[in-house]
Image 1: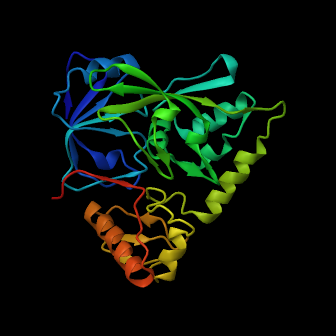
Image 2: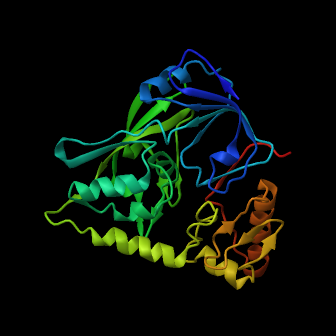
Length: 295
């Protein structure tokens, strides 16, 4: 159901989050807003009550929305914050809704190296910044020089990298501030190496269940170990729980289908954690964010 307010973007009420997550599951969001651009987002944020919850979604590849949906507000960046530019000094400015794959291709086109790994991350710049996403041995925060934040009042704040506490798949953030954009410094080389992206994507396609509904990697790798190997060693590769199952191609992926509920997936996540803990005394932490209410 659509609602009309004095904003340029699109406000959807009672919007099914299953339309916006890569697992294709999730209940309704009370308010789902798609801003036109950053300026429109600034205006919309000013209208949200101070005590209301705000959640953000890009490609929906790193989130599990429970079947009861999300109260408050959800803001989509992927069709809104799309600006990407090459700045003086070789810096790249990319807004939160730019896909990581697009950022990788932009750098290739402009003769910048080091961004190839981003082609293997199925998300947006905003989500990648929030969790220090990485692939093929590289992480996005290694290339950040400045973060542009936006607060509940719609104000933009430039923050230096040293203001953040960055870890493996975790970044400390300021209360009521979110990533609007970032400035990156990649390497400059005279020769472009276009074949590297193709090779990395081929490597990903050979080792991961690309094309099936999943969120990407479900669990962080424990220090010195691999979550997928632990899950496989626990005998859970291919294991089904309800209508969700552990991928037989890569054990750190959970696959869904048209009959899968969020409860099925969350139950499988908990079962994997319990089994790995019992067998190996290792606690698996999730990469995926779990949001919303249970039915």
